[in-house]
Length: 420
Length: 188
Image (cartoon, rainbow over all chains, first blue to last red; front, side):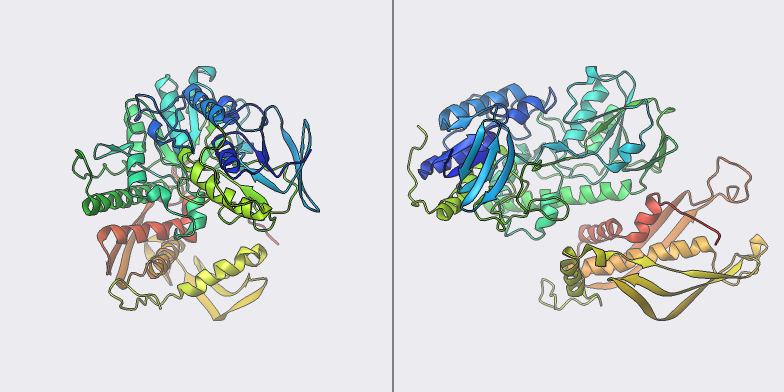
């Protein structure tokens, strides 16, 4: 089978790319291993909500039209939203079509799937950044008898054994899961490494309202000072709960969650915890305050329409005087360890040498320069700070579709109402 | 030359351009980034010993300091020793202090902040019943280390705190002290 472009993945990025390819009259197909929004369906926990408010899912040709713009979508609502978008885009879509290999050919690429092989001039990898849960090497030393699972496997507290739980990692996922498990009556110990503290609401406005209004979400990858660090940064330590409560370390401690240092090692059945907790909390507090300074300065210079609360600074993280440096799993009653230590993309099927020594795909704003005609979407800070948000898929797909059009020699006209 | 906001050149005596250059050069040569630090020690008498530091390995080759440096260590008279030099644990504190302070200078330079003075006092608690073998529940080492910096610089208090925090984040000795390290001691 032959087409001009193959888009792999039918989440927000793949669908947005299909919209722009259609707008440019570029013949293409969208291949999806499962169903539209597959990761959201199969690989996330039950109570998860989007971390961005409803109004902020602005996809090309589609957006939120309900009566709760400031609310946060549940997983079923997120899936329904993307199904609605798929209807709107009506892409040339093949579902249940896992890609098993992508290879270069004399005139482009071949994409091998369970339903035959496609030959094409361009390939867009829209399979997301969050495919494989990363587990640190120390997991191999966990004493037998302690259950282990990742955020991709976790569904709800009731599926866990009774007893204590150590959650490792305090980004958005780890903090939300710690909050939920502790409330279920299973005492949680949260091992904290580097984290990005942020309030859900500041001066009466949502954090994402500020990120959007100040232009921080639109900051480009070629403008940011340290791109490598910006791309490696973990997510804001926030949740999308209806009561808009914070889930920073102070909030978790108030619930009774035990905050300890980074899990540095396990020896003789005991956890070794880093003595760096105080500094990591100091770094997160300082960084949060710099972000709030940026918001205040922007508000002072630009004015904000409507009521806005006065500036304030959250309480510094309350680190106990001498946080524990070790923890005996048995004595602490810990029955389960939950790894909330991040995800990485899965490109195991990509037989094109475009990786750095650590297995990250090498790209310049989504353009895989070593392999002309190959593009990637949806990675953190791919082209903009918002690149991995649902709100970021449209702009990145538009930019890359223009590059792709030039590569395949398509005319550069963009139709007004594609896909309809 | 890096300049501060007032266009005055910032000079903390750290060549950050060279450090950034090294980052760039090592990006595609991870083997060259692998260093081995070495020290030798000779027992003199009692608790008095002398360490000599001269050679190390890095950038793919054997390297040498400009000259051999020696460091004596001993214990004070309250330990019934002769006090020829500082105790090893005090030298650990000195190592931490020097590492963090070098980091403060480097981070300040990278952030274009002129330092005028930097000093710190360090204090570490220790219950010597541990090393005397009197109580198995007492550890041999420090029960904590307190470092207090005094910094005069062209920067806000929050920016100065951020420099000190970043210095800890990138410090080798801070990492060595706060995280476990496997130690293998053999008799040849």
